[in-house]
Length: 570
Image 1: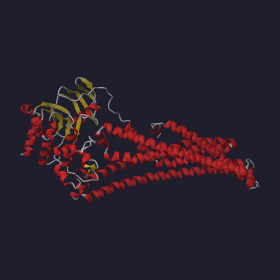
Image 2 (image 1 turned 180 degrees about the vertical axis):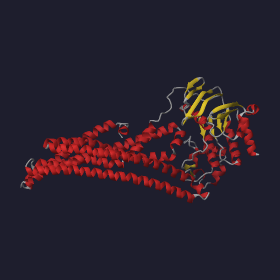
Image 3 (image 1 turned 120 degrees about the vertical axis):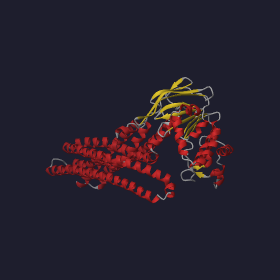
Image 4 (image 1 turned 135 degrees about the vertical axis):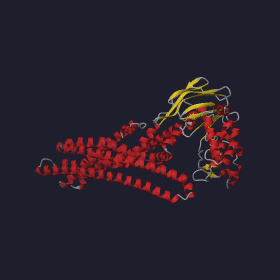
């Protein structure tokens, strides 16, 4: 809890301001109780209300001052909470983009959506509610206790002994509630991922007649979340009951002792009434903190996740120079190892590429093809080994100069909820309509555009018109033709396509290879005829390097893979 708070920007400054205003509010509360008790005592002793106009005026002024300070506190903390929530959300988003698609994939799309939309709001609520209540709990009881001590030491001792019991139960029940809330947040994340996946696959489920069965699955996950929520609420209600019970017990104990001593003449009415009015104010900040603590548990967890994301180690800062790629440039990997989830995705990979070559990366599923593409794209950093660019060493390729030259085509190109034209303009938002039309023609999208009611202005992506896998690949190709970058990274560009669509896409892709450095990871070996060099991967290691003809003559791993595919075709 404290760790989260003290990692927030300008938190010490805001705590100082809150402490100052809370102390003023506490002083106003004491003055309000003092003058109210004096007015009531005077009336009890037979004075007329007209004679108490000054006392009543001071009481009203103290009352107004207290609530005016409360309003200022509320405005201050609301503004701070909005700023810090927006700042953390922006920093977390920037870190998410900086760490690349691999990090987003591992974190989960549903988790990210939940965190950046619901989580950021809940964290804002946590800051709004918790910070002023926490400051009030530290300041107000001390001020009230000090004032009561000057009036009656016995009452001050009773209050002093009761408060630790109240705080002890608050801590015990708070720990139980936190455990429940953490479990609930985990269930919420599962539900979010499940919901996002369900939306994406709804059309396929309906087509296959599995929508009713999947509806039962959604019901089961939702029921699990309901039970988790109710379990957390039970602990919250128990905590609120304990706080109210011990608060009333403490006030009642003070009242009993005051009453007995008042009857015996051990204390006069004025200080006794003042203490009785202040006793609830002594416990109020603790009660408010306890009640709001449960309402902010999800916000605490969301804040912790945002800060974890922000503090995730980024790539090492380096000042290596990256040239505009040409025929004279050379890229070399030396014993590069990438360790993911406790195992080597790449192990001591070494190779060098000079000029504008076409490199095919092949191997069985899980051999490390995608990981190598991610390293080449600057999305991953090696744990061991090094990379050299024209003889200059570096630890990773996450360089702005390098990535501005790259065009990355993943297995599943993402289509944003926007027009087809703007999806093609993704890398070049200011591209003219004529340039987009040329890219559409080069990618073979004319027939698709002709079928759309609004042509290039048709909304596609989530919430818009759905495109097939082959059409999505063509949109990705159109982006590449529009961008005209000198380095291409293709990760299974024709995976999950039928043969006819694959060969049509291939005809469109091949012109992109001309005068470019190309790295293409695929298990479709017919592409290897177009490659200048082939890297054969097995279990994260490059076991063979050569042209198609050279590797076939060696009759090694590549040869066996070709033979297996040919048998599968026949």
